[in-house]
Structures are given as C-alpha cells and as structure tokens.
Image (cartoon, rainbow, N blue to C red; front, side, top):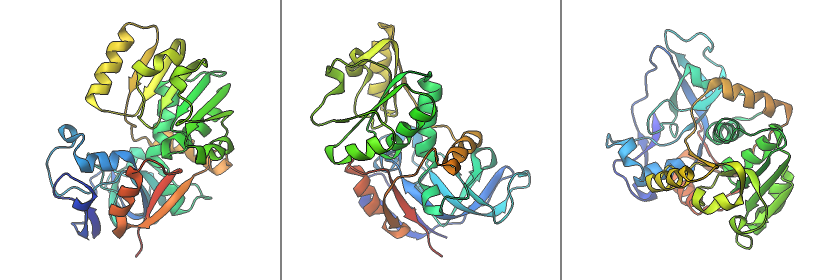
Length: 316
C-alpha cells in the first residue's frame, strides 16, 4: 500500500510517500480502506519527536489518527462490522497509522459513519470530536448552566467543543480565536467570541466554571484567576513541564487542573454520530490535501491558524 512514513524525528521534510506493508487485522480488528484522514497537532508533535519517550524509536512510523473509509477485511472475533461498511474511528496504533491507503481500527473503537457525512467530513471527526466530548463531559464535568470558555475555538478541537458545550447544556459559551475567525465561532453557538490577540481572558473580570484550552496555549497557573470557586481547567497539552506545573498549582487551590489525550471509543463516536446526523454538530473543514501532500498539510497546521480541520483524501 502507499502510505506516509518517516524514518527519523524532525521537520515536515522527514515525511515520505511510498510503499509500506499493508497491515493484517488481528482477531478484534478491522482493516479499513482509508478514503479520508486528517491532520491533528498530535501528528506533527509525534513527527517532531516532542513525545518520543511515549512513541519510541521503532521506525518507520506511519502518522495519523483519524480513519474514515470502508471495511476491507475483519478479524475472526469481529461481529459488528462487515466488508463494505462505512466506518470511522481512531487508528489502532501507538503512533497512529491512519495516513495510508489501509489502516486498522479496533472493533470497540470504531463506529458507522452517519449517512449524511461524506468520507472527507467523517475523516475530520474522530480525534477532534472525541477530545472535545471527553474534555468537557468527563474531565471538565460540565453541568447544565455552567459558564464555559473554549480557548482556541476555531480550530479542529475547539470548533467541536463550542458546539458540544452547547449540546451538553452550558449556560454561556465563550470562545477565543483570531479576529478573522470570530464570526465562525459565533456561528457555532458561542455567546461571546474574543479576539485572543486583543483580549487576554486570564486578566479580565469574567469568571468561568470550566475553561477548556483546546489550543494548548495557556496553563492552569495562568488561567486559575478566571475560574470560579471549584472551577475546572482542562488542557490537551501533554508536555511534562505543563502537567507537573499545573498539578502543583492545583494542590494549593479549590480549583482543579486536568491534562489528557482522547481515548478511542466506539460508544462515544456513536453519540457524536447521532448529533452529526441530526445536525446538532457540523464539521468544519478548512483545507483538503491529497495524501501525497501530507508534508504540506503538516506545515500548514503547524502555523496554528486553521479554521476547523485539515483533511487528507486517499484516492484509488
């Protein structure tokens, strides 16, 4: 199969497009003919070696987490899916594996693609939407009526988080973004949209029950003054220094800090699928690149100014 792969950590130039072995599904896995994938910040952080202590040195590595396509083969214990089904989910590999013509999904982490979604739209959903849902519902324990702030509200995770905060019953949703993206943030359901370059949410008088730093650009230490008593701060930045600093600061506060990475979950994807099919959630796609141009997609995403998701298409 054709795939994107790299043999060493480094800049986007280390990414190659060429032949790699087609994976074979284990008993509880499905092999998917990938039709679309996407770029997430974790993909280029892995490529750069930012979390090499977790990802190791077993090269070549195939990046990518999001898989959307058709079932090509199933393992002996798979019961929910059959060849030809349209499915999506997070790739079943420690470093990804989705940026290829074929990828593996564990049956428990896969779900059927909603009928109204194209492969390109579906490829933008799994990691971003699961991150937003689990951050708000599980880590942030969002309650009906809560005042919620989403930092980085126009990105892939943030654009889903604004919509999910509303769907989960938030009383007021505030989103930060660049000036050019404020109208998009409002259209997603935010009551307030703040230009992050002109307005520092950590220093104004507003107070929130939950702050979700979807962009990984702030910290609990900086944000805790903007939290109400017993407020919750959630970030997706797994940098060790950030984790330790935030946890130490939280020990001296009535407020809590959580740093996490999304867990693959078929049941959670099924919940998201129902909302997507009903129109409660919509997918925001910024740009689309062919798989062979993944390096260019990485460079674009690293600029940090995308609106929604950057999608990779995989043609026959």
